[in-house]
Image (cartoon, rainbow, N blue to C red; front, top):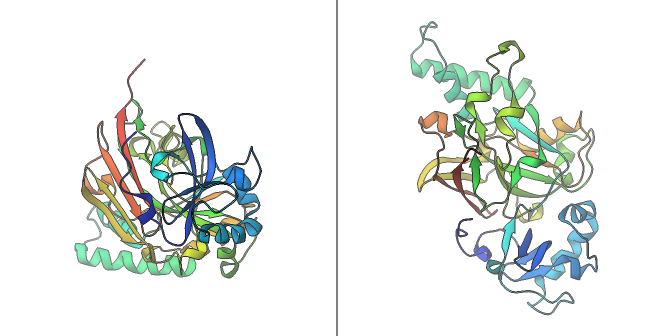
Length: 338
């Protein structure tokens, strides 16, 4: 496990964030982290010894008001007894969701790049003309089409500072940094205007993908194989924090930045999304009954490994940030065959 990027107290918007922490002598527990970095054990505060972050999301409407007061209280003055600095704890993925919904091809510049990169030249267009054509397609898609969404597995989630094992079978492992919305109220068949009222907060997700197994070579007519390419253990580093939605004016202009070994690879605003967060949640809810604690991953901007011709390998370190949500640091470790 790598050293955390920097002091947690400087890394999130608003008066507090939520996380799941542990020590060598203490099992993982849901925590409130104040701006000064002090930690409140929510099990003690709520007198609920078996409390999990999923339980917190189940009761979000009531608890969020109490947490605001708790965050504003002087450190050490609350009945739980605020603990030491968050830097003294191991930070886990902030929540273990029941459902993970993931959006693909949702950043305008990213999809334009893909459109141009996969041309065979038979259309007779220059690169500039091809980009203009792709931009028109994106405008029509945003106005007339539907988002592309698939299902991920909770078992792929790992912590924001944990090592990521690159399986021996993954020949082209790639990064995809994404904003993730955490559902705080059940959502079924909600409108885009209603959708954000069902979001408790936001967190960071890195949706690793093995490009070599995205498509089944033995049965190409089937199409994409997201089970194989995206759901290996640890393929979704999550967190470090859930930052309440009320700490943001909007999720539609947050900076998404990923560095590989210190070099910037992805650096884009969420305003480049084709389908904003509210439209994604509304679309998903027309089919799926979203539950408290569920994750909605909103797609990844341009700048993944396939774009750069540089995929993940043993020893690589990824530093990932999204405005107001903290920072991840994960190291890639090649699987050692048994």
